[in-house]
Image 1 (spheres, rainbow, N blue to C red):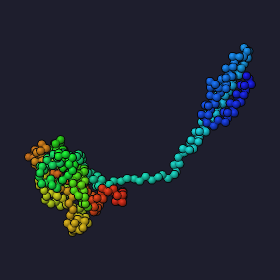
Image 2: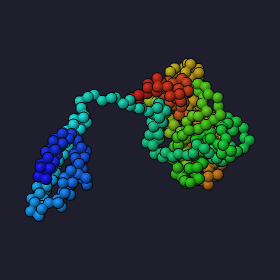
Image 3: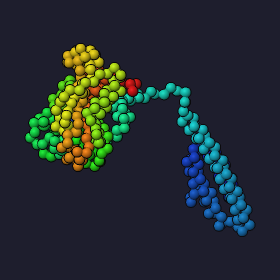
Image 4: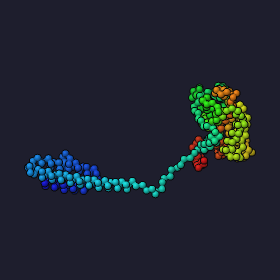
Length: 343
Ligand code: DAH
């Protein structure tokens, strides 16, 4: 049996040196120490030994076992070290390799102008509020003094969800929603999408954007309205910008006006850009109709207010000399990229 143990030890030594992975070492452990392992079967034969020989062989078997185990542990440490070194080498990151450039996005021209317009109004003390795009007939028309079958609805045909629910044609609906829940002093702007069932062409789109404004307080006059919107025009377009007000009609304001900005291209002389008018219409406005205040539970004998609705596409086209509204929605990168770096 001594002989056998010596053979096992030699075989183990050889096999351990050859092993080149940690799982292989585990297999060896089974080969020698497992239930049917080589060393285990030697131990099983010990019952047949004489009483003197038993402790001698027993000790020898133990030494062999300890020796093989220690060799396996040494090999394991070595193999783990090698594995770690090669992993570190494989996963090494060369921080000096130039990176792959990621194209950086930028704002859409309308977002540029919207952000600027809002910050002008916020600078004048306005709060920004939002309203739903899918709206009740009541907020979009009825409460704005545009009853069913009134001809004023003809210019604002829209997309109906049901008889009473529609895609809003104007952000003016937010005026009503806000006045229902808030009492004067009120000073808000409300940007958002609006919809009309219009044919698309260079200046019309079934989806466009407005910025609504509403101020209600004691003693608000047309002078406040004109002053505010003139400041707005100069902040947006520069001190040289000229604005003019023309009388107009809206159902929910009295008196009503439209504001034009002098054409930057021809300085009011008339050119192709302004369709020979010299001026470009950018917003509708007026003093809030007493009926509208009343509907919202605000006493028109105590309070007055002004309101305005700015066409975001219009003021953006005017700002950058864009001649076709469709460019805003087509996502043509050749168009959009021209606004990279523009703030
Ligand atoms: N809602 C109007 C439109 O879409 C624009 C407008 C006019 C808004 C007068 C107002 C206003 O707030 O006072 O044509």
